[in-house]
Length: 114
Length: 110
Image (cartoon, rainbow over all chains, first blue to last red; front, side):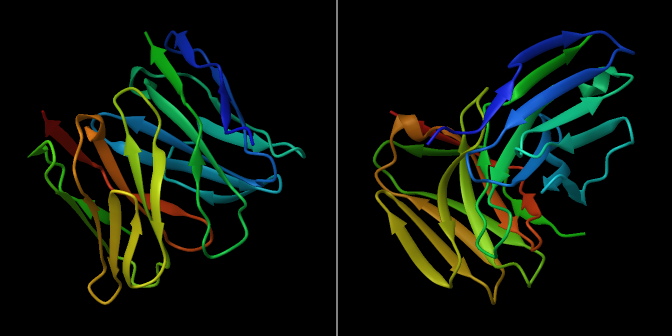
């Protein structure tokens, strides 16, 4: 079974631009969660989508948004990029409906904002 | 605020020794617990999950869970240089929301 895939793997943007990242979950998984990872802050939860609906949301500004499509693929968008948005963005997928859920991570998208 | 606490390390052990990694969590209602390994520049990789009190063994890895003490640990026996990585403790706090510790950096010295 194929794992979680993320595109692009690397991205360089300048301040003020916007960016869209994509995540395809493991086949059969309906939940996709997004995380931001920086050396100083560790893994910070952005949001989770399940069946095309945002089910959980972390404490990030409205510049960070996401969506999920009917095939469970998800995108996240960051508008008006700031230098501090430079990070590894990870998505993780799970079945999304059970107590003993396990998340599996994709390889991540490394974003550098100049 | 649901929290997961880990010692950041770094933890250094000689090759062949047992590495012990610890984690505490704040939400008493949590039911699922995980250890992920993350190599530098890579994404987290699931190595163990545990749901019931007690020990769970998988090869050289043993996860231990004590819900009364809100404590999860990971033991790595016969540590190898390839085990050098950051280990993340994660808790499923319900409704599929996961909480992660900041990770413990482990170095296995040949």
